[in-house]
Each structure stands twice: as C-alpha cells, then as structure tokens.
Amino acid sequence: MRYKDESVAKANGVVYTPTQLAQYLSARMLVYWDSSSIPNLRILDPAIGDGELVLALLNELSKNEAIYAVDIVAFEIDKAAIEKTEARICSAFPYVSVEIINEDFISYAANNSAALGKFDLIIANPPYIRTQIIGPEKARKLANDFGVTGRIDMYYAFLLLATKFVSDGGVVGFITSNKFMSIKSGESIRSYLKEHVQVLQITDFGDTKLFNAAVLPCTIIYTLGTTQDKEVKYTSIYETHDVDPELRRCSVFDAIDIDGVVLLDDGKRFSVRQGVLANCRDGAPWVLTSPSISSWKNKVSQETWRLFSNIGKIKVGVKTTADKVFIKPDWSKEGDKPELLYPLITHRNAGQIVPNDTSKWGIVYPHTSKNGKHVAVDISMYPNTEKYLEKHRDQLEARKYVIEAGRNWYEIWVPQNPAAWEDRKIVFRDITETPQFWLDNSGAIVNGDCYWIDIYDTTTDDEVYLALAIANSHFIEKYYDLFFNTKLYAGKRRFMSQYVSQFPIPYPESPLSIHAIELVKAIIQLQDQGKETSAIKAELDDVVEEIFC
Ligand SMILES: C[S@@+](CC[C@H](N)C(=O)[O-])C[C@H]1O[C@@H](n2cnc3c(N)ncnc32)[C@H](O)[C@@H]1O
Figure 1 (cartoon, rainbow, N blue to C red):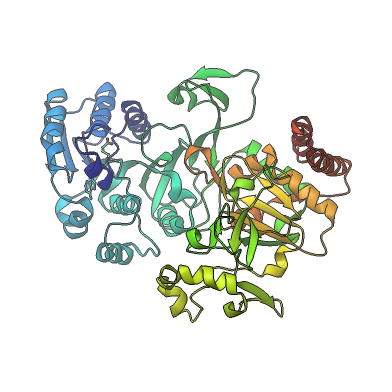
Figure 2: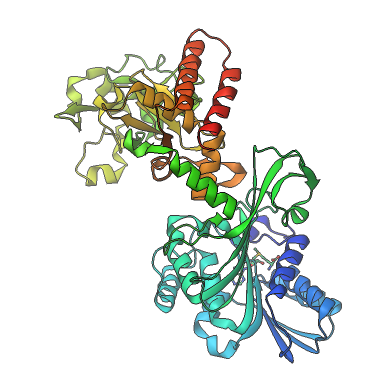
C-alpha cells in the first residue's frame, strides 16, 4: 500500500491495484470494445487513487489504436493524491486531458449526472470499506433510483452508478470483492446487473492473495444491455487439494487462461476453472458452470439418496452475549461450584469424525426444559449459581435487550433446549478451511462458535456414520465450492445451516457406502483406543470420492 497515513487509508478503503492486475483488466475490457467510430474517447475512473488503472488502459489502447483525443475524468477524495496522479498520467501520455474532481463520486454522481455526460470506457477499483458508510440518505436515494433493496455496500453503489454513465457500446471494467456474487445481501445487485447490463466476463481471483485488501477480488466487465439468456465467460482460481500429473508452475496471470491445476509461485496448488455463469434464478448466487462441472453435478445428484436436512435439524450453538461471565475453561478457582455448571463443546474440541480433544470448558446454564421447551430456571433454587451470577449482575443487566425482551437478567441470550443435547449429535465448526464434523455422545452443550445436528430418532446409526464420512471429505469441499461459491479470506469456508442442510447422503445400502460406514466405525474405535487413524481417514476419503464419481 503506497499511502502516507495508514488509518486514513483504511477508512477510505484504499488498496491500490497491482500493475499486472490493472493490465489484465484493461486488456480484457478492450477485447469487448469496438473503437472504430470513436473520434474523441472519454474515460472515467470514479476512484482513481494513483491512477494505475487509467495508465494501464492508456498503455493498452496505445498498443493498437491511433488515438487522437482522450478525455479522462476521474474522482478522488484524497486531495494529496490528485496532483501526483495528474502529473503521472500527463507525463506518460502528454496528449490526454485529465480532470480529477476532488469529490465523493457517489454524491456527485447522484446530483450531477447530466453534467458528467457519457463515457466510452469506465474502469474502477472502488474503495474497500467493510461497513456500510455511504450513509442512510445516500443509500435511500440509490435504492430509489435503481429499485434495489437491502444493504448497499460502497462498491455496490459504484457498480450501480457506472451503469448511468456508460455510453451505448461502451465498456465498464471493475475490480471488486467477489462477495456480491454469493452473499444473501448481494441478491438485489445481482438481479439488477443481470437485468440492466450485459455482463461479458467475470474472473474470480479467489484466494490467490493478489493484493492486500481483506477481500477476495474479482473482475467484472459489462456493457449496456441485458445478461438474460446471454453466455457470460467465467473463470475462477482457488487453492485445491486436486492433483494433476502435468502440474505447471506459473504466475496467477499465466495461470488464468489454463483449465486445470497449477502450482503458483507461492508453492501452493490452485485449480483454474474455465466456464460460464450458470443460468440461475433471479438473485441466486452466481456460480461457474462448464460441461464437466454440470456432468459432475448430475452424477452427484444421481448418487444422492437424501440430504443432511433429512437426518436431523441443524441448530446453532448457544450465545450468551456475556461469555466472560458464563463460560470459562476452568471453574475450580471460582469458589463454591455453581450447581448449574455444565460441560461445553467449543471449536477447541473440533475434529474430523471424532473430537480432537475431549476436555471441555464449562458453562453456567440457567435454563431447563419444560414440556419440550427451554425455560429459564428459578435462580433462587440454586444458591451457588445465584451467588456467582449476582457478582456480575451489573454487567448482565447492562444487556438492555435481555430485559426489554421480558427475560430475567441472568439468562443467556440464545439458549437451546437442554433435553436435545442428551442424545447423539453431530457437531461442526462454523468457520474453517477443512470441514470438521464430529460425533458427540457426551451430552455436552454446544457453544455458538459451532453448529450441531439434532439427529432425528428415525435416522439409523449407520446413516449418521455415512453422513460423517461425507461431511469430512475432500469431496464435500469441492461440492461446497461448486454449489455455493463462497469462500472467506485465507481459504476458509463457512459451514452453516443454509449450506450444510444441502449436503448429499448417498444410498446407504450400496457396497461403497457400507465400506465407508465400516471405516468410520473403525476410526471411532481406534481413536477410543488412542491409536493412529490417519491411514484409515485417507482410505475413507478415497471411498467417498468413488461413491460420487
Ligand atoms: C481501492 S482504491 C483504488 C485506487 C486506484 N483506482 C487503483 O486501482 O489503484 C480506492 C480509491 O478510492 C478513493 N475513494 C474512497 N472513497 C471515495 C469516494 N466516495 N469517491 C471517490 N473516491 C473515493 C480512495 O481514496 C482510494 O484512492
């Protein structure tokens, strides 16, 4: 990051584009642009920073075109950057005219759209600002102008506004977080773009760590029109466990045109996929598809007997909203032991099939079951617990929402029915790189950093073992990526109800499923005896792979 004041840089979402990425986007944009009838070219960068994108675009244009007149209009809120950027562009391309407006593009564009006119090329890497700080008024205006609903992140605003300023036949190229393609709150921007512009190309750079922003970047190129029924080229590159006998070592930008597995300069393997945007219903996540991916998906659905949602109810763990009071690794120093102290499973116990560590933290849990429902206990019946919680009464009462909801001051915020924990359950970790689903028969409470499956009585033990085999496999990582397309930074995935409920379970009577079930039982037995399980886990992974392909 080339920026003087790091905290201002962070607040303004400043992460300048690396030169190679700027070159990549510029070159791809021009593939879709017909320059023949443009005597006077107009270019817009609504968040120009140090001008890397504009310079790359001018460089690319100067390779092929005889360009006589170019007007650059740009916006930048960082006054200090403007002079330097203007000088940088003018010294490299003396024949262009550059005007950098020292204003917030969103406000300016909303109020002066006619004055700005239309542009042949719009290129942008809008600011990376985690929280929505475009302000409620601006958000409302954008929502009205574009007919979108829900949260409007900063970069959504830039993506939407660019549609107003691009000329017929003009091309827009953006570098943004790839999140809008998969998250729920991206629904309305996805619908808007599909309907109002023709998306030409998407490149999802996934977890290649191309630059410093805490987001996974993608490029999106569009022109005016509509995406409905059009083919959109879609490329993605993500770290993988897959192997390829012809593994090549190369850079991200050499890899991006390959279809297969590559070894990047950081020594990690990445899978590059070439395909098209899947034809999905309005607002659904954008995912890549190709003939090989859709035949893989078809095969998986042929081999699917049921889904995880059919074997049990997926629940989130408890949330106290005062963990320091309710939860501790060791309660022995707390004087009289609270009567309502129970063992607690946290992400520290996480493991595949079996927990990695069976020692548990403890939680004071002032709730019980009555007629199958959870209710708060009468705390006066438990003097040690009452004494302990009274010591922290101020802090607990400061949780105004608990009191306002008509609840007792000593309750935890999201309790669950204690009766449900007593049975067998599958617990799994929420945010993790590799899936971690394990069987628990201890009756312990599950903390909010994990989810758990409250298994139906009708589900047999063998079906539970089979589910554990699938949930912990490399197969499920591929399934997750191809169906949900939503990885967090550092290759982490979110295992939560909406995804896990759709995981497939194969036919339990097939010979391969029976084999997988036997291997899961063997892993549980060996672990009980304190023996090594890694060889059997590897065998199980291969069996699961075979079941679905
Ligand atoms: C992610 S950086 C990209 C800069 C440059 N275009 C590049 O690709 O290297 C975003 C830039 O937008 C500027 N910025 C932040 N909010 C803005 C706004 N509302 N209007 C215009 N520029 C803004 C920041 O100061 C920063 O220079």
